[in-house]
Amino acid sequence: MLDLPLIWAGLLALAIFIYIILDGFDLGIGLLFPFLARGDERSLAMNTVAPVWDGNETWLVLGGGGLFAAFPLAYAVVMPALYAPFIVMILALVFRGVAFEFRWRDPGHEKYWDLSFHTGSLLATFMQGIVLGTFVQGIEVEGRAYAGGWWDWLTPFTLTCGVALCAGYVLLGATWLILKTDGPLRDKAYGFARTAGLATLVFVAVVSLWTPFLSPEIAARWFSFPQVMLVLPVPTLTAMAAGLLAWGLLTRRDRVPFPAAISLFGLCFAGLGIGLAPYIVPRAITIHEAAAPDASLAFMLVGAVILLPLILGYTAYSYWVFRGKIDPEAGYH
Image 1 (cartoon, one colour):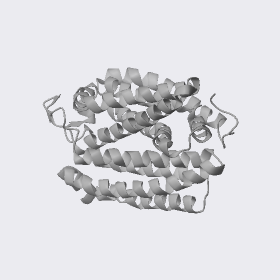
Image 2 (image 1 turned 90 degrees about the vertical axis):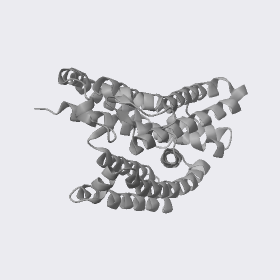
Image 3 (image 1 turned 180 degrees about the horizontal axis):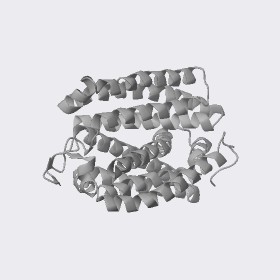
Image 4 (image 1 turned 120 degrees about the vertical axis):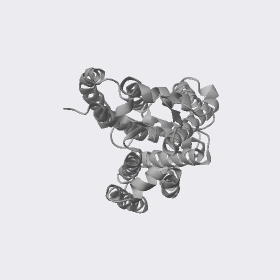
């Protein structure tokens, strides 16, 4: 007998992780925009993501829609708790998308579109960090409804997570530029990546040390036997990924830093999953308690089995077609 709620939890986790990686590096480029020279340097950076950035956000839609369909109770609790950051995030993504298109079509106001692109990227990233921090610190629930206040999402921990995700996305964006460009922009990206990599590792350490103090349950899961055996490989592998990242940056191996940065994100995501499972609303509602009826989950799973390979296929194909270093003379015009 298939455990349909667990399968759907895995699919949603996969969609969220793919979104974080794929949209993370183009949001990271937006965060770096003020530090890039106006004109060709900024245009070249945007051209590295122009063929793929629209498709990257498919995974955000899949994650949000999947949560609503597969775990309606969790959706009903989470949305009231996070209305404000979600609204700001969505509006920021809209402004960022408009700026991406109009920057090329309205060169007379390019500086304003650049500002909108950067500001939208910054707000979207910061709000995603806020959402992540709120999940980790917990959401107040009574019965089957959100019982907290309008500003419960705004705490020192969530603000720290917001800044941490900004550092992480800058790392993804900088390592993506290393992978895709040559010349002065690539050299500049190495400097950004070294700074962002160090900042990301510091924030990973800070958040990891802070998290057990937020909940006795997380502390018990991380430090009691036998659960600690599941946790131990994560910091070890994280140290290895950090070493690989440092080696790639110091020896200027263009193809190494971006996969190493993805590995860091993947390990942090795995550590988060170990700390929060089996809850979908941390320490309040489990995956099975929030799930839709099995008949609904089975019906949707048929569609997911058909559509997910198609989405993964065209995503992989688009990245394959536009692989390699970008031609400075070609791109989005």
